[in-house]
Amino acid sequence: MTPLNRSTCRRLQQLPQLPSVWEGDRRPLAAEVQAGGEWGEAGSSGSQSHGDCILWVDGSMGMVRAMDVVSPDSGPETVVRTLLRAMEHPHNPGTPARPQKIVVRDREILFFLRGVLQDLDIVMDYVPDLPLIDEIFRGLQDAISTRPPQIPPEFAEPLHAKALEIWQLAPWEVLADHQIIGIEINQWDVTTLYASIMGMLGMEYGILLYRSLDSLRRFRQRVLADDSIEQMEEAFLGQDCLFITFECVDDEPVEEANLSTLPMSAVEPVFGNLHPLEGLRSFLYEEEAAVVWVALEAIHRFMRQHRQKFENDEFPAINSRYRIPILESQKPAQADKGSSQISVKVFTLPDLAAELFDLGDSEEEGPSFPVVRDDLVPENSFLSLGVVPWDMLDFLRSGAEYHQPQDVTAAGDGLPVVMIQTSRPKAKTLIQEIKDAGGLQSICFNPGEDPFEGDRYDLGLFQTGNGELHLFGEFGETDPVHVAARKKWDQRCKKTKGYCGLIIARGLTGANRGNPQFQDMMALFETRSLSPKELGLGTLQLAAIEWM
Image: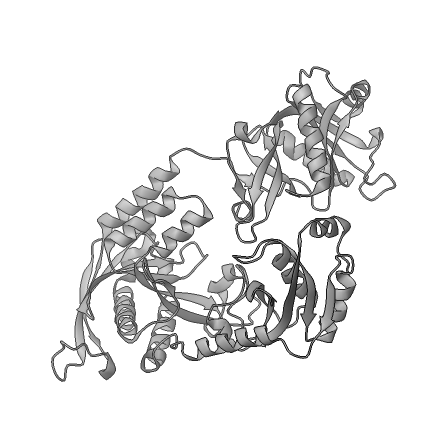
């Protein structure tokens, strides 16, 4: 059993303690419940065929504070993680707090919680029944039982088969997402659909069937203009389209990026609808399924006939007309009695493709922003903020294997420095990489946030001479140790008029770990400290850094 570290305990002890009783439980979820998408935090695997739901509720207030869906194989630590989130980052309208008492119906969980949370002054007890959680699960099961299937039963088999034919045909190998294909149907209150093929970049495979060109253009423009997670999500939900995407079959331990390398048996199609007023809906009604089936059949025929014309990035003007057979249940009301086919026109839109390509290209030619990377500092390095006294600085300057000098004016108690201690080979590699990047231009601490968990951070950044930014540290905004060190850093940098330094030292596994001596210090980069305002990046979001 791993106990909470002391800083976490101190942070939790500072939360107000409510005179309330919280219920907690971990229960298995059926596949159909998870597929409903009603449970789980961002990043949870809602497509698993089996999983456990962890739920913490405030029994006194009758509200859910935190929930998550986890693998059945995960240990009791996941229950604690969800509980800590219930305390520090509860769902609205909850506020950060500790409960006075916790009750669970699983004795194993109870014993684990008692061992981990013993310093938080929370009473923990066993009860045989959890009425509030029972009620929540009953409501969930009732909601799922009335949920329509993803595809109406009469369309399930033909749509699934046609989707897999599209997967085998792989139109994304020759068409990019800006090369739009029009599909004129004129049935089921649909005139023309505009198909955008996703997958050429090998990241996400599928077809978006826009109901109008305005929706397509508006989405592209908003994606290029918006740079925050919230704005991107709003743009995504503002689309007006039907869609089919391809995902990995449950329990396949393969990264999404390698989906195209999987056998067809490991891939499954997912259908849905997006609308500005409805949002995302992961199932199709009967008329929508009929439209999607006809559109996929039309695309399949069109690509089989004209695929070779799209080789070498070509996208000529082409149009063809097809008689698409329809199921008896698919027949639109206005179709001729006894008719079993509808006429569908499929055509390319080269002018629109050029317009959309130019839209993205002009955006790329706009102002460029530095890339934030997190691959410079070696993993498991020892990192600290400190100061080198002025009377010792000359020894370091002359004794280090490499020194990047600056015209530093001595003031205050010494030069504020970031210290990175790693192994000698990794230290030499780090020094060389900084030199190759044009040296160390500046050091900055910039605000950051995790948009999913709501956590805020103080991000330590190196700016190299080539303009790139490198993440060297991610510190909790309320971590008392870092807050104190950061305060001293700012005070010292103010006295030195912005001058500071980076020391790279060896001896990570030796007797001097965490306390390198002068003979361990291999490089000193003297540089300037920048404020977040001078850097001009605003608040960085964790996801944006991870994508780099």
